[in-house]
Image (cartoon, rainbow, N blue to C red; front, top):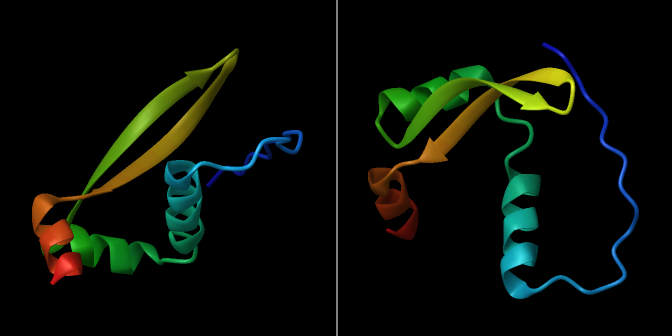
Length: 77
C-alpha cells in the first residue's frame, strides 16, 4: 500500500460546523482493519469501491468506503 504526504498551510479562518463535523468523522475513520470494513460491506451497512485517481501528474490508488442507508439507520438507532 502506498503512502502519500500532503503538506498544507494552517487555516486562518475558523471551521464552519459542517467542516468541523467532516474532520471529526475523518479522524474517527482511521485505524479500522480491512476485516472490519469487509464485515460492514458484507452486512450491507457500507459499500466499497476501488478507484484510480489522477492528481496532477500522479496516479493514486484509492479505496472509497461509504455508509449505506441501512448503515445510517443502524447508527441512528
